[in-house]
Each structure stands twice: as C-alpha cells, then as structure tokens.
Image 1 (tube, rainbow, N blue to C red):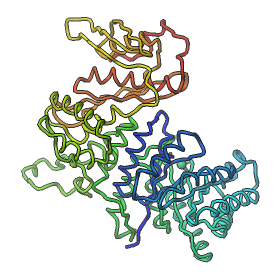
Image 2: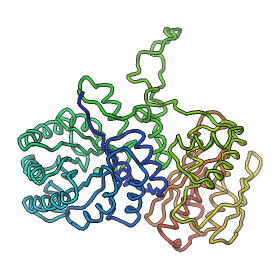
Image 3: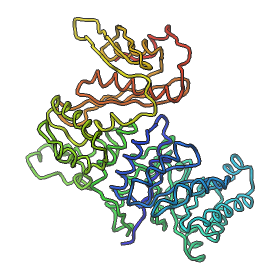
Image 4: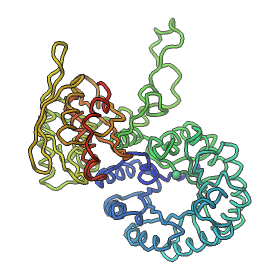
Length: 520
Ligand code: MN
C-alpha cells in the first residue's frame, strides 16, 4: 500500500489556539512524544517570528530525533529564510516551508497584489529556499475559495521553481469533500505533466469537515496531510490527527494508503497534548473522548451474551488506550525510577533526577500507585516557567456543611512573604479570592475544570483553568491529590503567566471582586 505522509503542525498552527502558552520544556516534551508517535514531518515553528520561537526550534532540532523537521519562512520577507536556515541547517533532515495567499480575497487583504505579482513573490521565495535545500514545501493560502485556474497557475509556477511539496490550505475551513477531491484531481494532473512535486492538504474545521476534507484529498491524490493532535488550532481548529489516522486505518482498503504512525501511541499523545495545553477533550470526541468506547446493549434481553457487542470499528487497545505503563510505588528504587524517566523520553541531570525522585516518593506516599500520567504531571509541575513571580507557600481551607468556607493563604511575591485570609462561596472560591487579594490582580476566570488523572478515589486531581485580563488569555494547571490545593496552584500558575505577558496588573478593582469569579 502507498504511504500517506503525516505532517504534524500541533507545535505551530495548533498553538494558535487562544491561551495556549507553552514553555520551552513543554514544547520539547510534546515534540519528543510526536517523534515517538512517528509522524513523518514535525512542524517546529516560525523561527523568524521571535527569539523564543527560534530557541524552541533550536532545542527541538538538538534533542528530537526521527521525523523530518520543518520550519516556516514568509515569502514576503526573504530574510526569514536566512534565519530559518540558521536553525534548520543542524537538522539531519530539514524542510523549509513558505506560503502566499492565492484567493482574491486574501491576496487583496494581505498583499494588495495581483495574481501575477503574487506568483512572482512565490517563485522568488522558492528560489531563495532552494539556495539552502531541495526540500521545500510551498503552501497556497485559502486555495479552496480561489479560482481553480489561478490555483493551477500558482502550482505550476511553484513546481517549476522547484517546490518538492505543494500544499493546498483550506485556511478558513470553507471547503467541502467533493470540491476538495475534484480540485486535487485537477491540480494533480498538472503535477504529473511537470514531473515531481507531491500534493498536500491543510484543513480547518469551521464546518466540521476537516477530517472528511483531508480524506477526500487523499482520494484525490494528496500524499501528505497536515494535522494537529486533538484538532487544536485557531477558531474551530485543524484536522485532528487521531481522527484522520483512525479513519485511514478503518478504511485502508478504500484509500489504498497507510500511514507509518505507531497507532499505540495515539492515546498517550492525545492525553499529553490535552494536559500540556489545558484544552480538555469533550466526552463524545471521536477516538479519544471518554464515552467513545462505552457501549450500551441495544436490545436488553441480549444482555446475557458476554461477548463484546459488534459495534467497535477499532479496538481502543490498538490505540494505546490502556497503555498506563508499569506502575511505580513508594518502594520503587532510584534506578527503576531513572529507567522509567528514560522510557518516557525525559533526560535529566543526576541532581534533577534525585529532586524528582523525592517528589515522586512524596506522591507515592500520598496516593500509593503512581501511573505514567501521574509522573508526566509531576515532571511537568517543576518544568522551568518563563518567569515565576508568585509562589504558593501555604494554604489552609475550612469548608463543610456547618462552616462558612474560608481560606488562609501565604504567598511569596518577589521574594517577599505575604499572607491573608478570606471567605468564599466554597473552598475553591475562598482560596481564589484570597490569592487574588494578596497579588492585587483580578483576572476573569473564564474556565475551570477538575479531572481525575487516573481511576479511583486516590487519583490525582488535575485542575486546568483559563484566565482573562485586558484581552489576554492564559491557561493555568496543576495537579495534586487535594483538588483545592491543585486549584490554588493552577491559579498561581495562570497568574504567573499573566505576569510574564502583561507585566504589572491593571489598576485593581476591588469593587469588582464579587463578580469576577463564578460560585464554585
Ligand atoms: Mn492553518
């Protein structure tokens, strides 16, 4: 069977989801897992965009082996290619990716250029990229709202200029499967006549058609699909990698194409991305939602039949659903712990390993069995943040049916120890109000979620939340066997992110205090 290449853009396009701010360590962790999933191409960002993106790409290239690594450069700014190559030259297999808008609406809005002028920009950019490498991908932005003849002219020029991959982007998520398939076929004929050049597709999910469109593109001859894990991305997101892969697997005969992805890494990857981004998975989310493999008997009198009902189109175990790994416990020795970290893809110094080992012993003392998911969270909780101004030192809450919920909090702010106490509608509310009072920062809590990381009442509670302040959205997350403590830490995590993005808080509005938090 022919191979369809999986181009993962979770780390670039996916992170355009509002409020997903990842530290360098978190990006690395995600990149390592994507390499373990065995995606063909890993999009590692846009180095010319910022110092931070440059160094993230640099670290990923140093540390992540396996997939081809791809970076973005603007066709309208040829210096981008020099910056991009400066980092990409260290990758064993590197790809330069550039793009121009092709639809009239996008050309006029972003470039104010005619098609002819836009083609010239594209050709110059591809030629510049070719000075560095043969491995050049060229994207046509908003290709499915453009005139097919104009798309064809642009593709022909790009192939002639030496693009190895031509990617058609449904940037606004407006395409339908039949249109995608016919445009790909139409353009494919063009590719054949001019020799090389593989076709690729990049779909957004605004009409809920990203997966269907990606599959239609494969039927139409696309050899590469752009995806993001869990479909994260701006607006309605991108084509979800796990759904495209499972559909391909379920209908391999129909598509006569297969991917080289390790299916058993799908669950661990989806869970990790959800944890790191703080974007949860809805229960009925295809492939990885919590309800997806729960079947109710359709006909109650047949309930005695102990065989599995014939409704699973794919076995969840094939996707690594119960891949919790070996379980560690309090008596696990340092050596076994170190091996476990290596197996999960972490590399630490001896000092760091023993620090984490102490944290792990603490956790094992509290909850007994420690699963891979617990460990991931534990390791994530210490990863270096961009800037830590606030630190939670102490929290005590009283709540229950006969007391007014109240919290006593001690925080370190800029090295100074501050404390206060306050009331609330519940323990979490009391803790949040007191913390915000101490730091004199009152963001709006736009989302708050508590989730059990593993099963059982001894499971760790993972809290993820989103804060909004002056138009800036950030996420915060934390984990503990005590969910009130986890909530307070998640809030402090979010406040630190706000601090590093926004600096000093806007003028405090104490009067607004009652209204900024929902009752918890
Ligand atoms: Mn996109």
